[in-house]
Length: 507
Ligand SMILES: [Zn+2]
Image (tube, rainbow, N blue to C red; front, side, top):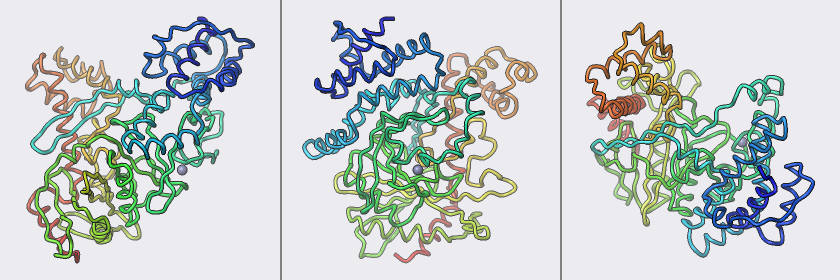
């Protein structure tokens, strides 16, 4: 490997894709030489056409990884941090990125500005686009209620060497800086064995309801231009009147994106509850293609409409052009729901002092019209359902056991990578018609719920349609999980319950 040539090529790549100025080339080159422990440099010709055709920096990541492995004893983690540091040098400083983003926002609009940051984040390896593209994704149409499934292969699994290192280093909880992965203090952070490097992250400041927030992209996004909007300070997730104001204010600034928040309680919330943040992006989630089931009567003073949505779980849709009014209606629904009990529908808002009721909200804007989706959630557990009454029921845990956060609740299921291996095992069992004993002997993974899945699929086994049949089985499980999350079921008792709930609010 000719490392001198690679440095030459990398500089060319950065000039083309990361706005590196001629005046900074020698300086940045020397910084890179330092990281590579190279004492000297020689300018050589590079193939411009080849370098300029790169859509991401994978070529350099691979070669630099190889170089560090050959010339050092660094672990995979340490190598990754070194490479991220190099990409960090080559990325414009945070202030320059903000200046350019705002300049584009002012002159070319929000869509172009968001594109700029997304493109920069791919080109500097913050967004792992080629890894995201490896996810196995499919969508399925059902009348009015599409769902989408993504088996997530992009997040790297740590190897044993790195895991072993963690045992002798301080535990993550012992180190308080940055407080979490969503804190602004990650900007430029070098990382640790138990914490990713963040030299190449860039944040765009924005004001939401007069509060300071920031926008960044998700490194392993679940859909196109998956962004994270995070609060300036490290404080717990919360759903209240101000949440609705902030979400609506976000789509005023960036109508190209939808934006939503996970609920503020465990089981029904996302994986990070200790830092207030939202998720958004260019994608139209399946719930957004859903139609109203019926409309509720609001006072004549309101110009907005309130619907129950024809969706798997209990979702209200508020539509209108008047933001203050939408916030008022949503806040009335939230405040009522927080303390609402309906024993007929097994809904208890509190156990002692512990609160169970919350809402998963999401907003999009088209033209002047806002659409605010409110999914009613409850995280209570009982003896029958120790993981949650309105959570995926145990018979579906072989497909998805993790919490049903905003993305899933709105119809895009993120399923664990292990399913790829398990789907292949299922196919092998079906194609060879193994007995239960043979299945479990050969594939211990298949014990329990997967055996039932194999029996179901064996009933109509057809070698040519097996892939479609397995997907259809998974789709049905996902649909049933969404129905599990419905606090008011789609039957007479449930519908009456929804109507009674709305009737109890003074609009
Ligand atoms: Zn934080």
